[in-house]
Image (cartoon, rainbow, N blue to C red; front, side, top):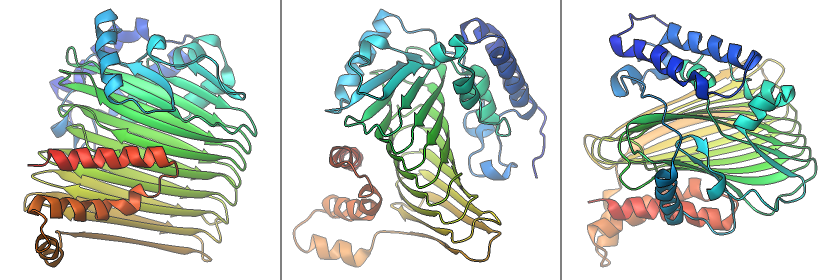
Length: 441
């Protein structure tokens, strides 16, 4: 049951933030009205708190406390710092689409010589061009979740990607979110990917910070539609600054015989929350969702996932791993709904947490809601420490304690990382995990 709490002084500040930012928000008429309604929905709810079941473990009224003002448009100095950060996180062989402080940066992006069947525009262009079909998709997320409503009200820019029927993209797309952190500020982005019938694509999302970036907030949402017989491979890497907040959502819809393979790794941010909603709209579709949290210090990372099996003969597999050191806190809430007509559903979910200190915390909450009788479903959750006998075995063969721990941790997260189909991107995830391991004391 959701209980309304009295608003604090900090929670009244967003009305001023919205009023000041309105002249920068693209779209008029119906778009402006939709923004107003979304902001009113956010104001009624305020920041999510622990008395809302879905936010029980991530109380933003305690963790985040207030919203920061909208980041200013990046100037030449900010873009220069962003370019330097981009070089450090460059991926070979991809097409970069860069957002700096929530604004598309054409000089840092690669939008020329597009492959056949690929179209790329900015969110601002689509909202101001009057494309009613795409606008309807961009506004599809409802306002029942306060942070989604806030994103709908404040979305400033993003990328809109369309892949034509039967187009098979040979070059992965890479959406890079860069925070300059020049001053405490928030960025609100929303992107859309529309994958046509029998099309295929690989998409990478990265969240990074420029040198010196400190306190900032990322508020992002992504709307994805995967057409009949299409396949999307998706990799998401959160390497934000250690004082950052990253609150993101995704709405994914699969048509018949579609395939969605997604992997996410969180090793940055002070507080992060990722809430994907994946809906099966056509028979014969399959989802493989895998994730890894690598946390230390006082980091808090929350993945709250919903898979909605609404039609028959679909399958989903979820594997989630968390490695938590110091006073880190990992949250995984995975919910599978099987609707009454979704017979022959095959859905399984497993989450495991590895605790490296006595003060580390993991909250794992897998859920099944089954309203059909001819299904195969299951879930499980475990938490524990490194196996002392395996540590002794490795140390007896000449490895230091840190090296032995790193080897066991790599093996622990390896099952999830191996789900990445693209070899280069798999190596990228392995490198990110190795950087985290190397940084451990």
